[in-house]
Image 1 (cartoon, rainbow, N blue to C red):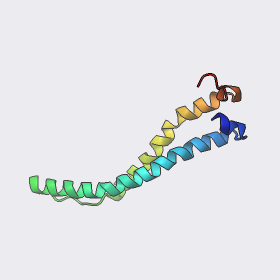
Image 2: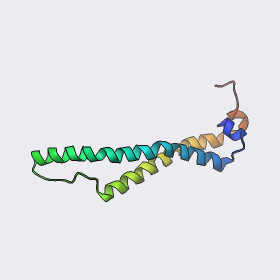
Image 3: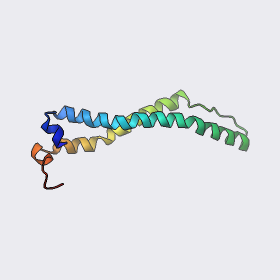
Image 4: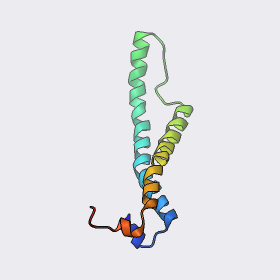
Length: 101
């Protein structure tokens, strides 16, 4: 973070940087999870149908998609609070201190 602060990014820029970095991990993971849920639901549907005789859908419902997208974005934003507060607590001198790394 020290280099970023030397480049002149303000506190709002640091917050934005940390949130954008977390979204670069979240968006592909959520999309992959949703796509992998389709074969998982297909397998589960076949197993439940053969065991109990109840047919369930092989595609995620709209509520499941909204919930997964919402939680997939909300949880990383909430978990970014600690790194953001730690980054904002540091002074520029502390962030550039080479003796402690």
